[in-house]
Image 1 (cartoon, rainbow over the protein chains, first blue to last red):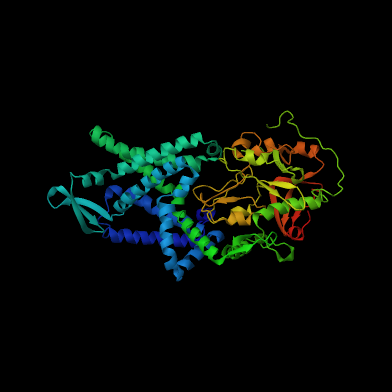
Image 2: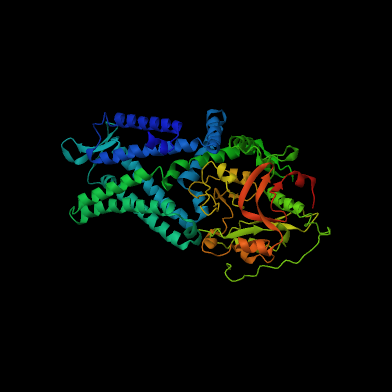
Amino acid sequence: MATLGSLDLQVRPLFRAALTTLALCGLVALGSRGGRWIDPALLGYLMASIFAIFGVAYRYWEWVERPATWMYMRDSLRMLASRRALAVLPRLGLLALDQIFLQRFIEKRSLKRWGAHALIAWGCLLAFAVTFPLVFGWVRFTSEGLNQDRYQTWLFGLPGGTFPVHSFLGFLAFHVLDLAAVMVIAGCVLAFVRRRQDEGDTATQRFDLDIAPLLVLLAVSVTGILLTVSEKAFEGRNFQTIAYLHELSVIFMLLSLPFGKLFHIVQRPAQLGVTIYKAEGEREGRQPCKACGTPFIRANQRRDLEALFHRLGLDAARHSEGVHHLDLCPRCKRRLLAASQNRRLGGAFDPFAAVPLEVEPLLDGPSGSPQ
Amino acid sequence: MVSDEYGFFIDPQRCIGCKSCVGACGECGTHKGRPMIHLDELDRLESPQTTPTVCMHCEDPICAQVCPADAIKRSEDGVVHSSQKPRCIGCQNCELSCPFGVPIVFSGLEQMLKCDLCYDRTSEGLKPMCATVCPSQALLYAPKAQVELMRRAKPVREFLVGSLLVKTRTAVMLPDPETPLHLDAALLIEGGF
C-alpha cells in the first residue's frame, strides 16, 4: 500500500481502468472460447497487452478528468446524445477521414514529417490489427481438416473462410507483418533523418519522448523482419534467439505505451471533438472584445473557459468595470501590457507629453555577452 | 538548457516599430518561417507608439493549465515551449486564456505555436533572434546583473492580471520594480494614448 501511495494514483481512474481491463479480459475469454484458442506461444504477448491496456486506460481516464479535457469531453458527449448528432455525424466522418486517416494536418506542418508519420502510423496500426486478435485468441488459422494445402480461418471460435496456402491471399496472410515492419523501418529512418536536419527539432527534442519511441519501434520491426530472414534465407538459424529478442522488444513497447509518445494514438481523436465544438460555437456567434469591439471568442468557449477558470482557481483574473480577462482579445491583452507600462512611466508614450529625458547608454556587446 | 544568468527584458517605450524583430523571428530554427513575435500599434489615432510582445514564460503558465491535451510544457530552465506536436488538438484555449496574448493557433496545422525564446539559439548561449536585431534594445537579452547597472528602469517579473498574480521569467522594465505591474482593462476602455 505504501508503494501505491508513493505512486500518487487517482482512485477513480484506477477503478475505471480496472473495469476496462476486466472488460477486455471478458472479451478475451469470450472470443477465445474460454481460453481454448489462445496460442500458448503468445502468452507473454497476452500478459503484456493486458498490462498495457490497464496502463493506457488509467492514463486515459486520468487525462479525461483534467478540468480542461473534461470540458471538451462533456460537450462532445452532450452533442452526440442530442438531436444535433445526426446533423453532425456526416461532418464527423469527413473529419475522421481528413484528420485521422489521411492526417493532412501533419502534411501542412511538413511534408517529410507527414511521410515519416504516415509510414509509422499505418505500419503500427496494421501490425496491431493483425497481432492483437491473434494474441487475444479471436482469430486463428488451422489446416482445413486433413487437407494440408488449405487453411481454415476461425473468428471468435466460429469458422470463417478458407484459402489455399500457396496463393496470394496465403502469402499476404503470412507476410502482412513483414510489410508493416518495412513501413515502420522506413518511417523511423525518415524520422531520424528529418530530426537530424531540423535545427529546431534538434534543440527541443527529448530522448525519452522523441528518440526512444523510434528506437523501440525500430527494434520491434527489425527483429520481426529478421525472423522471416532467418526462416527464408538461413534455414531457421538462430530463429529461437531472434524470437526471444522480438518478444522482449514487443513487450517493452507494450509496457511503455501508457508512458510514452505512443499514448497520443488514443488522444488524437479528441481533435475531432474540438473541431465540432468550434463549428457549434460559430453557429452561436462570436462575442466582441470589450476594449476594441472586435468579435473574437465563440460564445460556447467563452462560457466554458470562465467555468474552467473558476475550477482552476483563476477567478481573480477579473478587471474593474466587470471585465473578465477572457473578454479581452489577444491583441488588446498585448496593448494592455504596454499601456500599463506607459501609465507607470507617467505617459512616456504620449508624443506631446513633457517627459524629462536622460540619455541611457546602449548595451553594446561587451565581452562575454552573447551575440 | 538556457542559462539562468541571462534574462529577457522588454521595454515597450523603446520600440520604434521597425519590425526587424518580426523579420528575424521567422528565421529562427524552431519557428520555421513563421514569426512568433507580435508587434502592435497601441492606438494609431493617438500615438505612433508600437509595442513588441514575446512570451513572458510564466512560472505557472495559464496556457498549460487550460490545455485539454496536456501539450504545453515548461522546461527546467523556465522556458514555456510551443505545444507538443503529437498532442496539440488546436482548441485555442491557450490563445484565449494567455494573460499576455502570446500563443498563436494555426488552424490548418491544428497546433499552437509561440515564442520559445529561440530555444535552438538560447540553449547554445546565443541571443534570441529578435534581441539580436532590435536596434533600440526594446528587446534585450543580457546578463541580469549587467542590466541592473545599465538601466534606470528595473526589471519587473510580477503582474497583476485583474487581481491575479502572475510571475514570469521575462521582465518588463519599470521605474519602481517593487510593485507588480497592474494590468487593468479600464486603461484601454478609457483610452489614454
